[in-house]
Length: 147
Image (cartoon, rainbow, N blue to C red):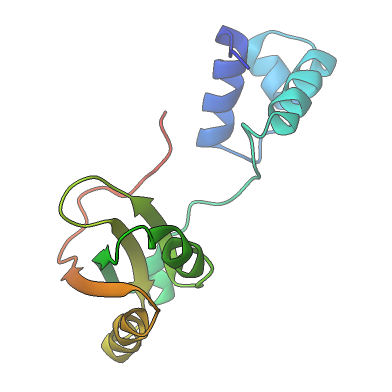
């Protein structure tokens, strides 16, 4: 599906405030509520909009540790590993990458022991050859909304 300018405006507004009603969006964009509703429904049906959420400050919830974990897998076995990792609650992102490692995992933890158990658990997943764990010291930006 190719997005037009109106679809992009709707998406940008919802990224800034997902609580905007169709009526509020219509007023803001100078369009009818019915048009906005039908376009949002189309974006949802096309899986461009997969849900609505709040932007949360995880540190204020106690998740003070962010880890970036590189994983090297045995030949041609990375997909199964990534599927397992993606189902773990603390995991925020799993990326299949190029370079000397196969996968990057970004995860958040409340305590160092929790992180330690997580990394040790990765090592027990079949076909994981090696992991390299990086702990984030400071976060300059963490916002996956492209606004």
